[in-house]
Length: 242
Image (tube, rainbow, N blue to C red; front, top):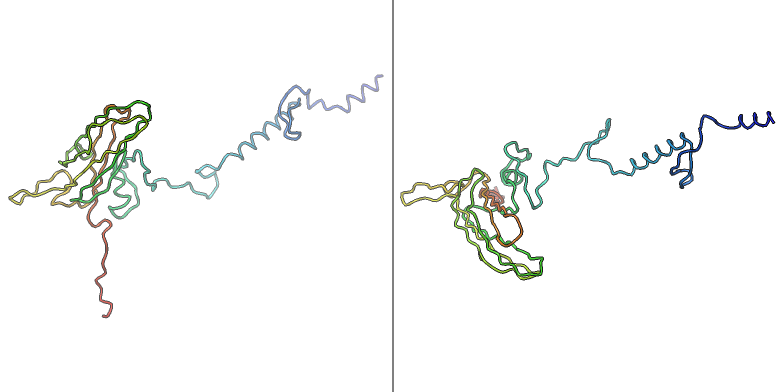
C-alpha cells in the first residue's frame, strides 16, 4: 500500500498545481479547468492574437524604417477648415493653391473668386420634421479676419420663407467681389481687400448667416479672393520658325 502511493506521487507533477483556473484553452478551442501555468500561457496567447489582429498604426514601430503618413498637406474636405496661420507649413511656392487654403479660418463653406467677379453661392436648408417651419435669414457683413468690413453689397434671394414638412429650400447668396475702387479724384478707396481693384496674394473675407426658426448654428461663409494670375491661361508667344 505504501509503495502504491509512492508510485502515484512520483508520476504527478506537483509544480503544475491544482486545476483551479477556468478559462479558454487555445489548444482545444474550448473552456476548461487549467493549472496556473496553463492558464497564464493561454492568456498570453490570447493577448498575442489580439495584438496581431489590430491594424498597423501610422506611427513607426521602434527600430522600423517606416515613416508615418504626412497629414500636413491634406486639403480640407468641407465642414470646418483648419486655421493654420501664422505658422503655416503648406510646402507651396505660390499663392494660388494650398497656400491660399492656409489663410482660410474655420468656415462652413469656401468660395474662390477674383476681383470684380459676382459670385452666387447656393445654400439649401432642409426640414427633417413633419411640421412646416417659418425661417428668417440674417446675413452679417463680410469682413477680414481682423474684423475690417470690406463693403461688399451682398444680397439674398429670400430672407423669409416657409420650409415645408420633410422638404427643402435653396437660397442664393450673391456676392460682388470688390477689391478697392477709385473716387472721381483718382484716389484709391480700399474696401478692406486689395488696392486698385487687384490683390497681390490670397485674401479672405467672412460673413455669418443666421437662420431663425432653423435649429442650426449660424453658418460661416468664406470668400477667398485670389490674384488674377491664378489659373490664368498661358499663351506661348515664341517664334517657331526662328
